[in-house]
Image 1 (tube, rainbow, N blue to C red):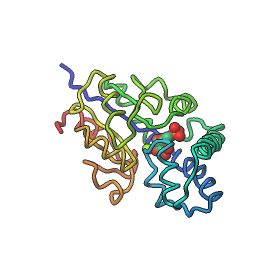
Image 2: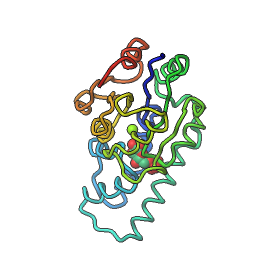
Image 3: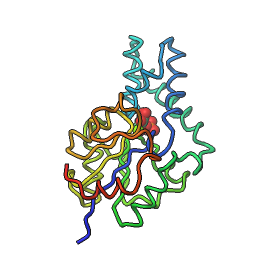
Length: 221
Ligand code: BG6
Ligand code: MG
């Protein structure tokens, strides 16, 4: 029997470099409100839902807001973010990602997306990689945001897998925690000092080769 693992990819910061666009759109709102919002603060927002991200920024600046204000800023943030995506194409896929997606397809390993974003589908379409994914679970499908493991557990289930037989690629602290809480093998994509809770950490996908994928396929958590 062929050994299978469910390979679950986060989107923002793992497949595409959209983290910088999220930052720019939030920074504009923070500036409007006179809140000092840095790249370091932005780490706290990675993997976190849109609404929770706004709350974190408001907490940083100790700004109290009405529900109406919050709704206005959430709309503005998403409009500004979407403007950054207008010209997006395959060139925005992060280095090394395509060869790994291709390898997984070639060896018949199931692939899912597990993202907090409600904009995930159009991004996969624009970058031309939608067809690699056997299942997509995004911000429209979950009630509990990362670090709750819900998004990854649904993804594993959609691929007919168990958490123990799944792997998550994540660039965010919240996402690594979600994978760990869900008892899924966590692979951090980014800086070791930020993602030290992950079982493995690589700077980016150019550091992940097919041999490592083969190891993951046969690995027990
Ligand atoms: C996550 C990002 O993937 O999606 C967060 O890391 C973002 O920064 C979240 O806030 C929600 O995304 P969206 O596209 O629904 O605003
Ligand atoms: Mg991410």
